[in-house]
Length: 322
Image 1: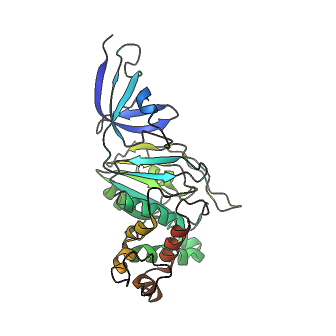
Image 2: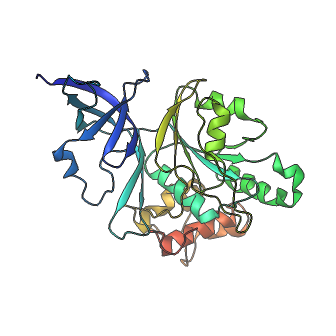
Image 3: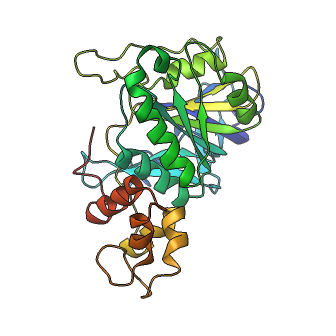
């Protein structure tokens, strides 16, 4: 039976050896597998094909579902992608998502608290791989009930606004700020990322109640989240655009990045470094360092500088896990 080609499909989910594809903007998912040639390309990657990848392939017509036998044979060049090194497996890395218009780093205004080194590892990766990023501060409605977290929320706002990032405040529970967020997501493929328990899936459900993504309360004993999302998966929004829901992050090691270029991915540190006495200054102990001077003057948030120093010491993230 003659094989038929398909072109320009988008990967919307991977579960084991199976992939779900669709021809955006149409949402008619079908299942595919990888060709043997692509499977051999895995190397150090846990996934040679990622959610958001645009692919070509073929399927064999016939049977109850003629697209059930689709085979992915080619991956289009990526516009961008996000990748992280596994902190559990020394040799493996994972492509989080590809061809992303926007990455949303979800934080909780209350619990669980996301450490600054984890936020900054993600933002550095976004800068390095040309993915625009925004901070989404969720659970802001809880600040009235538990005002002891007001200083934490203000710290998040202050640090990242001074670093040049937009901080959007929302509440998945009440819907506050959701309409504005939906406007920003419209027409884009956006990644929702963050540690477990910050409300990524709840936020997606508020953006589009038809999604019905699984959610779970945080552990009151440890103030940590529970994994409810197992796979990276793209979903269409009724208001327009697509979101990629992601499992909670526990560790985020950096890849393909030298110590000398690390400061380039902290916008405020890179701007200050132009006035350093020495070219190639690492902004750690060198004399005449304009970055350290800016930190002492409060022009660069101490939290961001601390994250930068930790990354210099441990770029692969083995020491800093949640």
